[in-house]
Length: 143
Length: 143
DNA sequence: CAAATATAAGACTTTTTTGTCTTTAGAATG
DNA sequence: CATTCTAAAGACAAAAAAGTCTTATATTTG
Image (cartoon, protein in one colour):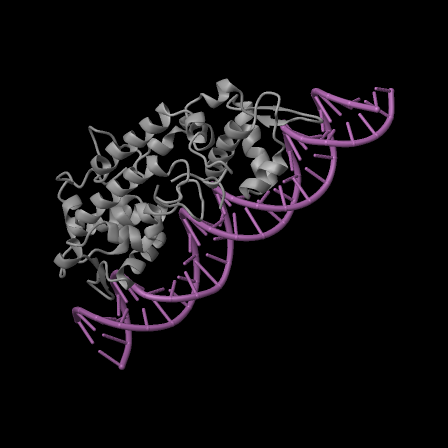
């Protein structure tokens, strides 16, 4: 479904929404350790999200990554779009270049509603919404 | 969603259901040319499906791959299970090892119903069903 | 300003997936 | 039985994805 980068990114962003604020930042190493993600790899993912203004970061002592209120209120699909691109939800399931309602591939009508529904769900729910479902101890995100 | 192998396999199997019989076999090269798939790569995919008895093949002159009536009546999910494995529909969307109704990842409840619906659709519809939706000229499978 | 801290960035390696090529083996036909 | 046709199989190559490592850059603090 999603690439590893995207899986990691989604989890990390939810983590940031639950555990960081503009003044309380999270370093890569603690996040990576908690979520069991290779730290340098996660670094790149968060850097990309920061460049695209989905989250924020500050260098130096007491620096780190964080999600502002505004960041956390963004739709989860934003993260997917940055990391895997919008084609996850639109490209043909069997790889045809041309596949549409007018000229559908054999699976089109079976897959389209599923993908549309998921896309809608991730478009309507914010990152914060997902963070709010986490257990007290931050379970539901790890292992 | 699916791997390239699986995409190719699905298209080829539908093609065989529409264009082959026990006595009218299709060589790899014609199939690959029609569907615009690398022929040797497609060969391996069809060989795997034949080993798993999803389709059949015969060597020698006038040989080739084909789908019997029985083959074509199999559920489309069979092809996916052979080529990508059943985990496509069950593995956690954000990569957690443990993710279930009891201990769901944050996206679990959003993704599960749609994946189940898709899985059910591919389980209940036969390869032949998909083949029957093809245009006269075999469009809807190519490019 | 100097030292320490933490992200930014890019080179590099490994693994997986995808694709190619060559050889082998089985079946039909003259 | 020899030839020819076609799948089967495995070695090999290329590309993409995933992961690692090193150096640079910005920021805070003494």
